[in-house]
Length: 164
Ligand SMILES: [Cu+2]
Image 1 (cartoon, protein in one colour):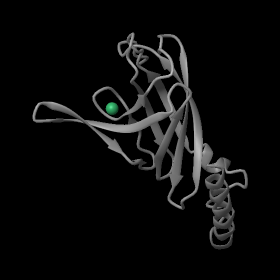
Image 2 (cartoon, helix red, strand yellow):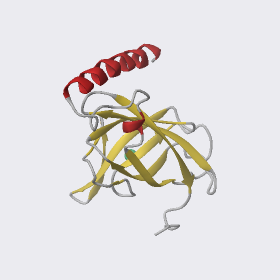
Image 3 (cartoon, helix red, strand yellow):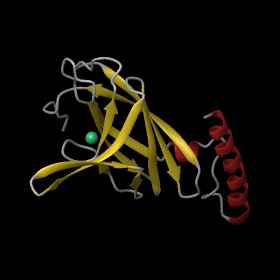
């Protein structure tokens, strides 16, 4: 992990200098990486409350990226194992599929919602009770391979408590 982070920081520095050399300032990334860090807007993040004895959870949110990126990894303080899932109806049966990553096209909101894309939280460390919040870290990879992350706090609530 530490090695990976160091490598990604190293390639970031290289890419930044290439970008500065060949492109205008509009494409040069800040040295602190904040240009892409702020490129994702995350809205309406929520987690389904768990039932007693249930050790699997599901989280939903709406992601909008200002540039083409891929969501490559999700971490949370309530589960060490999170998968990105899609859900589709096939011959009357709901099927879940694990995705290696979730590509986000620039400017297009991606809504993770019940019956569609979701984050599946395995081996919950604790019960998820309505009104609590869960911390997530989302890892994205940009086209130039630069990886960056974004923190988001999600509210534990039932599906019917929609805010819009
Ligand atoms: Cu799932």
